[in-house]
Each structure stands twice: as structure tokens, then as C-alpha cells.
Length: 343
Image (cartoon, rainbow, N blue to C red):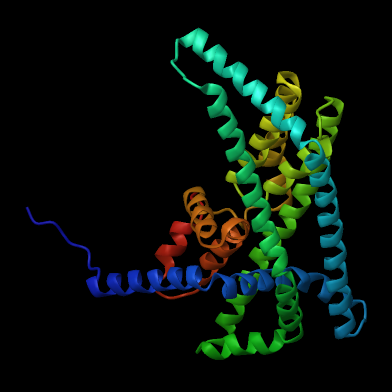
């Protein structure tokens, strides 16, 4: 019995794999050059909305850009000040947290030995090493944040230049295409998906922070402000971020204060996740950025491997931009179908 065969060019697949491999290699090797530029482009897209609003109010274009940048700087300074003050509070109590963590781990190890007859030799020393590993992970996380801050001046310069020369860059991309109107649709679609996702996610994070802080405070959870802020900020990373932020909040509350505060944190985060998934996200963000969960998670892992924490945060906007580009490019419809969330 004869079977019909699909017609896929082997040379086309090889070229596609080589192009993808080359782009990923370039992103990895040139991370210090490309990552600030991509972050700056995303921030410039976000600031375009308030700039246009100021223009509609009759302000000159240069003043509109200046006010938008000023608003951005105020928000970032307030956020970093709040995070820094909370980290200082944690640092002051870190010796106490380490002692309580070691004590809790030792009790758990002893209980496991007695209940399951596990021959866990030298568990006290092993638990000390476990605490030291957690300490080194926290240090590496802080170093990645400091690395991002060290590039903040370069990112700010890129943002200013991109906003000032917006028309020139739009004209450049339109000249690359034989159909300028189609390229205009691509640019507007990319801008819409980036701004709608990140601005919507920012609103959701404010809601989450308020609910977390209220729940943790009513439950007398220690470091309520820090844990609420930490869990809310990590929610910007789809799927993975809620587990990371919520999990660390649960572990820290358990090690410092015991089982009851940890259970309160679990209850508050679980209830809030239901509100976020079924009410906040459909209401605020809508269906425009609904992407294939598998591709989303894979994109987060891929870009976090390439660009660290920053890559994980901007992975979904980048995947969304790729979806828009594939939808408007002949021969790439199958890739757009793969990225899109199924019916």
C-alpha cells in the first residue's frame, strides 16, 4: 500500500537549524551587548503610551518624553529603595534565621532517622552545608541583581535614544519590507503585545502584593512586607515565578517562625493564585497574550539560561513578539500556530 509523503526540504531544515543555533550562540556570547538593548527596547515600548498621552494633552514631544522618563525613574527608585530596606532588615536577622534553620533541619533529620530508620550519618554537618548552599544561592541572586543595576545607566541611555529616534527606527523597518503597511502591522502588533502584557502584569503584581501583605499581616507572619513583595515580584515570570516566590516565602516563614506561619503563607498564596488565574489575568490582560504553556515554559528556561534572571522576566514578551512576526510572515504560519495557545 502506497502512502503519500510530505514534502519538506532537508536543506531548508538544515538552514533553519543553523540560523536558530547561530542566533542563540550570538545571544549567549553577546549577552552583555544584546541584553541591555532588548531590555531598553521593551522599556521604550512601555513608555510610549504615557508619552502619547502627554502629546494628546498638548505638551511638546521632548517634554512628553522627559515626563515619561521621570515617572519611570521615580517608580524604579521607590521600588529599589523598598527592596533594599527589606533586604537590610533580613540581613540584620540573618544570624538568627541561620540558627533557626539549622535547628529545624536537625529536628527534621532526627525525626526521619527515628521514623524511617534512615541511616543519615553526620546529618548536623550536612545540614550546615545545606544552609551554606542556600546562603550562596541568595548571594548569586543578589549578584545578578547588582549586575543588572550596573548596566542600568547604559539601558537608560538606550531608552532615551530609542524614544527620541522612534520615527527613524520605524521608517528603517518599513524600508526593509516590500510591503510597508504589513511591516507597520507587525510593529504595532509587537508593541501591543509587549505593553499589554507587561502593563497588565504590573497591575496584577500590585493586586497580589496588597492581598499577600494583608493576609501575611493578619496571620502575624514574620517579614510580612518582604515576603509579600518578594512573592508578588516573582509572579512576573509566568508559571515558574509563582512557585519560586511562593516557595521561598513558605520556606523562610517556616524556618524563622514555625509551621503555623508557613501554613498561613501557603493558604494565602493558594487562594490568591485562584483569584489571579480566574479573575485578575482574564480581566486585566485578556486573551491577547495567551501563548502555548509548553512554549512559554521552554522560552523561560531558554532565556534564563542565556541571560539569567532578566532573560526569564522578558522571555514571554519576546515569545509574543515572535508569534506576531510569524503570523505576518509568509511560510512561518506553522510556527505561529505552535506558539499560540490552542483552542
